[in-house]
Length: 76
Image (tube, rainbow, N blue to C red; front, side):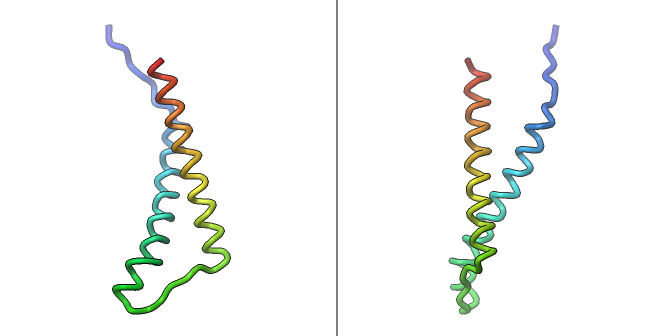
């Protein structure tokens, strides 16, 4: 008899949030480093931009830890 796993929609939502936060972090890093070299213009942080970057990095770390715990829990 086949064992069918149910889709955990909470995990799908968490993955979507994780991808969005990773996009924000990567985009900000790109704009601060590579885009400055390509365009010759200097980009910097605004207060709102820095706060959103820190929040995205924090949420990305928390979601990574969540999935790490879920995977380790399912192995045991």
